[in-house]
Amino acid sequence: MIIIVGLGNPGKEYENTYHNMGFLAIDRLSKFFDIKISKTGLKSKYGEGNFAGQKIILVKPQTYMNNSGESVVLWKNKFKDADILVLVDDIDLPRGTVRYRERGSAGTHNGLRSIVSYIGQEFERVKIGIGREEGDLANYVLSKIDPSFVEESMDKMVEIVQQRVKDNKI
Image 1 (cartoon, rainbow, N blue to C red):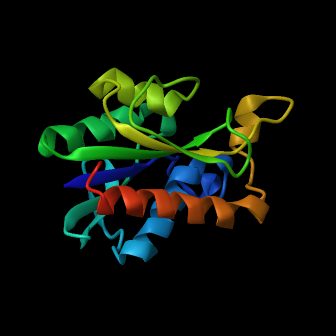
Image 2 (image 1 turned 45 degrees about the horizontal axis):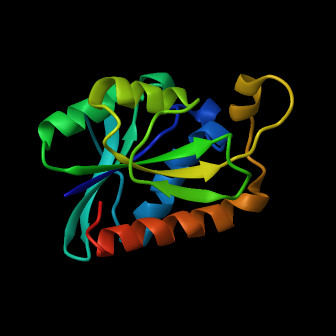
């Protein structure tokens, strides 16, 4: 079983912001895998399905970004043997860059820090580069997305995730 968690902030005011790239990624995977995000539980909105012989759960935590670990640990405790893959924005990567990591530190990302504080560093992640702009970081990550790079980033992300699922390496 694979639990794929997209990080973001719940609420209309956060839709289509840089910090919600994880939620956008889950929306894209929902279409790709034909899994509806229609259930609630474990501090999340989620959907379940199958792809390439793997059971997949797509998760959007409904905690705020900085508390994402609260939801992820509930999933980890419920499905102890499940593999976890986290989809997250990354200001330290150039806009449009998508990078897979098998494990690692949280770096500067508070959502990842929260998850690491609950379950440790042993989870996979796909980081979606949003770049960094001058000025207040919080204002930037909560600003509306420049859509020019989103399609290509989402396509790269889907390619990485579907290959990882097919290879059963998550």
